[in-house]
Amino acid sequence: MAIRPKTTDGFTHEEPVRFLDGSSLARPLDMPKSQRGVMYGFVIAAAVIGIILFVFLFNNVLNASSRDAATVEATVNRGVSLDLPVLTGLVQADDASILNSFAAAGFTTYPLPAEQAYPSGFDIVKLPSDVTAMDAAIAYASDLKKLSAADASKYLSGSWRMTVSRSEYVDMKVRYADFSSGSVDAAVRNAIASQGLAGTSVKDSGIDSAGNTFVSGAVDVNGSIYQWQVSACPLTDVYSISGLPASAAYVGIRLHQ
Image 1 (cartoon, rainbow, N blue to C red):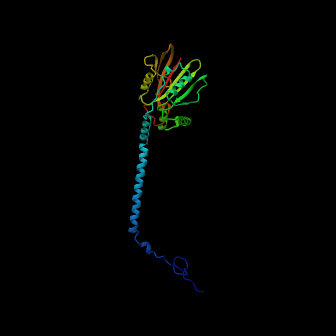
Image 2: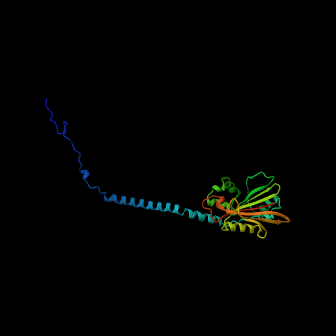
Image 3: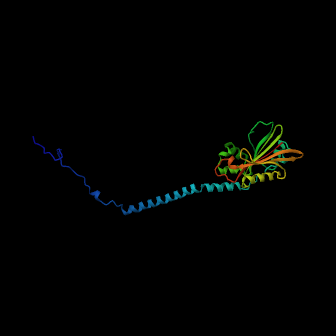
């Protein structure tokens, strides 16, 4: 029997060890010129796309609030009139006569669910002239407080809500958003002027327990004395919607016996 020679690594080799040709690994790693231009083109295109996306996103994030404010301002100033009802001229009329006068004036009104069960009376919203009753039904069903500032201002500007209740006495209220006065104090003064109450007896004024600025007094209507109160607060206290004008006010006018 032949003795196989031992190798220095302790293993017996029956065949010679073959090594792979590594010459290809020694070649330069430079990209061929024909492909280098294509690669540079992809890099430049990717850089351009990245810059465009960055500018687009940066512009959207940084300028979104200013664009929204411009949209709200344009919506508020779109040319719809408020046409506030004068309560001293309506307080001695019945419900049908009041509603008929609104229809004769060309107002589009939308009835709201009664807050309480009064023997008679109504609760309606006079809509802006460019808003339909169907539009209002959808908006009020979804709750104005959940709308964007632009959408909410569409329904708030040029509209008012009137509530009339009749139990032992008549109680009339009109509420609306004032986008033009510029402050709560000015909104109160302008509301008093709109009702012809500026020359009537003033009993009290100041800030009530809810934080509203108010003025109250009394007025004689055809020999009957009625109590009136005008109050206002920032619109954002009522509608906590980001983007509504900080100078806008929410005004309430009340006339009752």
